[in-house]
Amino acid sequence: MTAQLIDGNALAKKIRAEVSGRTEALKARGVQPALAVIMVGDDPASEVYTRHKVNDSTETGLAATLERYPADMTEAALLARIRTLNADAAVHGILVQLPIPKHMDTAKVIETISPAKDVDGFHIASAGALMVGQPGFWPCTPYGCMKMLESIGYELRGKNAVVIGRSNIVGKPMAMMLLAKDATVTICHSRTRDLKAFTLQADLVVAAVGKRNVLTADMVKPGAVVIDVGMNRNDEGKLCGDVDFSGVKEVAGWITPVPGGVGPMTRAMLLVNTLEAAERASSPR
Ligand code: GUN
Image (cartoon, rainbow, N blue to C red):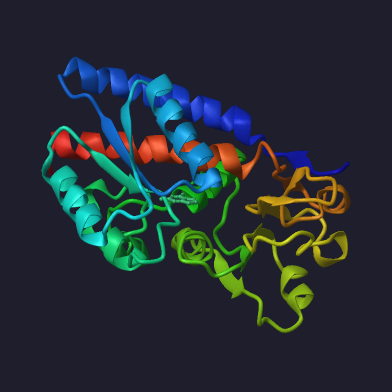
């Protein structure tokens, strides 16, 4: 192996410790940062994710509640609940776990969350703020990727960065964050012709497609930084990313593993956003 590993578990632990410290400081001023997590229906993956979010929060000193509603909840009832939470000064972050049942309009639900409490960074106002470089909330996964790059002291200015994937919650915001750091950014996707021609030019590749082996060793420039956002299962049922880790680690300069890479960072950045929401609410500019 030639690549150095970027250890997401270790970095997330450090970030959680920082969040704990800042949370203590807020509490000393009488502010208890609080996150409300809403889950509608009983999607098994969402059960796990929401439990993690609540446990991570409470372990860090944040207050967190999980509100569970049946799959047949009406959209009007969900919107009403969000509006009540928007108006509740004791709640700083609101997160509606996705997916929500099909009879609900996801965009409408997200847009009902107050941008000041949008700790997922999914609101159109958060996306707009990121686009124009205004303060807002950044989506947790690309934000975590940026923290990983920062942790290795990676200078993005003038670098060629290739983002594979164009989702609203990872690919597009990732590209904006890299651009804001003066990287030359290319977004590749399922319709890109000759993906390899792009990735071979890249000093940094972020793979965020949700498909195994999207990036293989022959597609990577020697010494490049490779960030793997993927969460897939291999033939043996083991967790794996979008990157062919065993091959690419022989070529890359830095690489994130799966598991233990971006995943724990996504979780940590939700805590950062929630704390940040509480800090902003308690000392308005
Ligand atoms: N479903 C899968 N990932 C996420 C996430 O980060 N936030 C929300 N709200 N739902 C999700």
